[in-house]
Image 1 (tube, helix red, strand yellow):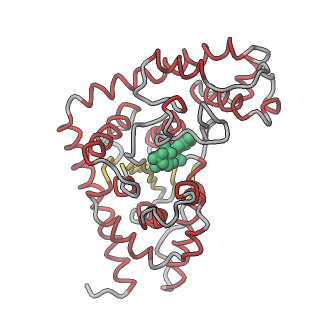
Image 2 (image 1 turned 180 degrees about the horizontal axis):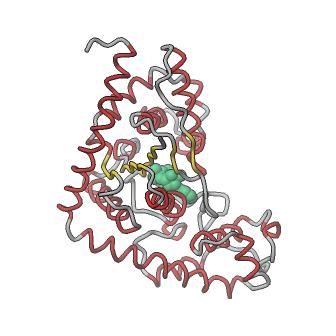
Length: 332
Ligand code: AQP
């Protein structure tokens, strides 16, 4: 039977990229009635230093974002990673399964470490083995993620296959990434070659889920574009990353394909299209941010939801961890 797992790091506020690439998909999975487990991956967040007070705030805000976007803690399991110790324990086993060479090829590590390889945390390097544990400790079959996480899900598959092979078992499933929608890789508003990211130093590069209408309009007005108008077919966006990004965002928010959007707006100038995009973004995001703000008034209730979610998650994860340790040869 299918089971979905995915997570987001509480390493800052949610962006439109997280929403279109991940959370919107999570809600669809839940609505399709698939058993779904959604995590706030706080252990992943500390692979780069986090201020403790901000980390707590970001974890609660992320939970509020999940719920405000439509996840229901009665239907999906919502919890933070550090409350279910099986993730870290299975992560250790997978550190011993994965090969240095595999991790050396991870593009996210290369991007995040840059020239600073000797100075980044060991955790940042082994991030993907913990992610494999997050997924496989539930025997999850499907992982909805943005395009940027595809390589990590492939590594998860490699780890599952190597574990099964090394121990002669058919224990871990080979998980499928689910990368769907018109905006699986939302780009920075300032640079069409970089993905929109919550940790980009420039706030103008992203739309935050908590931005107000004026801020959203300002960021879209100032978003980088080229001097040409909008084409009437998707091929006309080739080699125009900034234009393509804005049209893709419009398509994802309005639940249309890029071609459908272009059949409506082809021929217009960006000066005309940008206000349309702002209006749509505000229409879709304002109700979510208002609900997030309301939920954040009661942090104790959010903490209770996370504790309850963790209790439910442990019921699935603990037996899978125990079985894994038994397979590996640990005395029980
Ligand atoms: N720009 C994006 N377009 C589409 N999907 C995106 N995701 C992130 N950015 C985009 C998807 O959101 C989920 C959670 O991501 P994450 O927070 O765990 O880590 P990340 O991918 O590293 O996201 P950020 O925003 O860039 O965070 P920082 O800056 O802290 O690293 C994933 O499914 C991801 O694909």
